[in-house]
Image 1 (cartoon, rainbow, N blue to C red):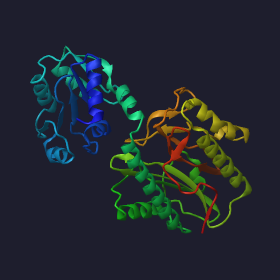
Image 2: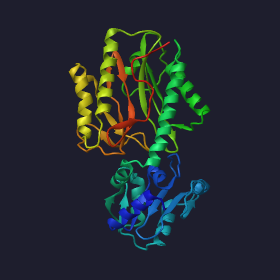
Image 3: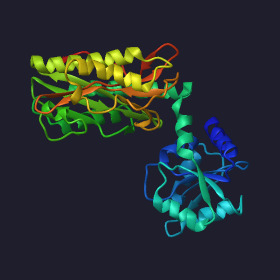
Length: 367
């Protein structure tokens, strides 16, 4: 049993639970090394205090589970069968009357919760497995960090492909296609999220995506991208000028955003509060007069999900700890003027932090 699964089983014991039901696909991957794209079919991991766990999957996934190295029972079901009736049979073979359950209260769909309660009407749900899983995933192991470093190298390669793909009149969507095609040729099977390329005024939309907008000389182009390396994500953002210099106002916005990002990244250390790190970056932007245009948190955790616990924001007073991984991504978005975001994900070290990506962040013009 791997260490992650041992930790979860110990939690089941400590909480006095009869069973824990893990339904989130990313969390299942974390504990089992079995990856499956989320779908409507039921997949679940069931962990007991004093018995080996089992996986329940669609029958067509059983070979993939075994290939992933799962050494414990795996039970399958056919599409015409009732999955929760079968799950109940497998659980009752271990414990005829499981009363106390741990579930992911942040993730478990109501439909699945109701299916469990129909099978076990006396069940109670006193423990939130989501919080325990967040705790387990918070500090990355050396092995996890090595996988994430490779994902960061892949992201750097994706930036290089994106910069090379910039041409006057080429659409944002076409640049994205060039990036993702280049990464597939290099062996990257999945991006960690839909690649974002925003040119000109499109970059002033902090939650926008690639459109038919054409890249034009003398404008900024924002790239936000990442890759999935063996289930672990990278995420980084660079903003560059294309084909010529930009206006003094746009350059000022860029320089302020860069200063905020570099200042915050240099301040990271164990013991610093997440809220203070957010304030360090925000103060730089507010002092320059652009505070109202930085309208999101400074960062988010990263690991097997692109966005995971913790948030680096004003309301989170958690202290940073060695091994934590998160993004530092200040942005300034002024409609009709410009949009700039600069992002690295970092892991906290004993004395500071190390970024996963190393593509230059300083102002550059791509010809």
